[in-house]
Every structure is written in C-alpha cells, then in structure tokens.
Length: 120
Image 1 (cartoon, rainbow, N blue to C red):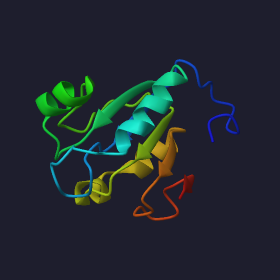
Image 2 (cartoon, helix red, strand yellow; image 1 turned 90 degrees about the vertical axis):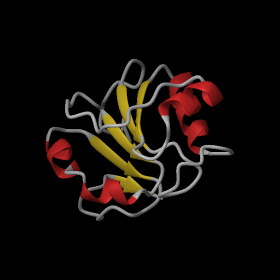
Image 3 (spheres, helix red, strand yellow; image 1 turned 45 degrees about the horizontal axis):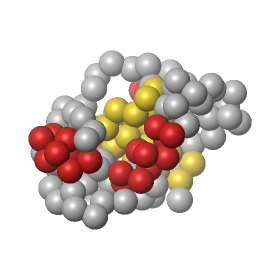
C-alpha cells in the first residue's frame, strides 16, 4: 500500500493498533500481532503500538517492545494498522487522520470500508 501510494517505507512511522492475543482481553501470550511488528521493523519502519488493554510493563518484559496506553493525538504516521479488534478502536476518529494522507489497513475487518484503504 505504501509503495503504491509512493510513500517511503524505510524510516516511515506507523501506528499499530493492538498487541494482545485477542480483542478486549489483556492477554499478550502467543499474540501474532508481534509478528506484524517484527516484520515492519525488519523493513526499517518505526512502529508505535497503542493498546488500551495490554500492560506496557508486561509487553516490555515479554517482547522488549514499548507500547502506549493512550491514543497518540499527534499525527505524522504514514499508515495505521489495526491488528487487534478492540472495541475502543471503533470510536477512534480515524477519518481525520485519513484525510491528512495516513493510510489505514484493517487486518480484522471491523472498521467501516470507507475509512480503510485496505483490509483482509
């Protein structure tokens, strides 16, 4: 998506929504979302993770990755990837970010289609 939109990949800032094993649950054990994080960082992408359910200290201990407990209000993200279908993500005003050129990829298919650029 980023290449098609002619956005540079290496050094890009991406916001990943969710890190837990499943939606609306704080359990981070066996999460596949960490694989998305690893793949993106392998391409030189700067990934910020926001998850209102996960405990930052547990994620740091288990995976060595810092996360945010509050949604970052500042923009500057080339893309947002919704990785976990937490109910809190449905109330985020992502259309404002999309209007500034941020690409939105919905792995779980829970966001309205008119907000996303692509989904699984």
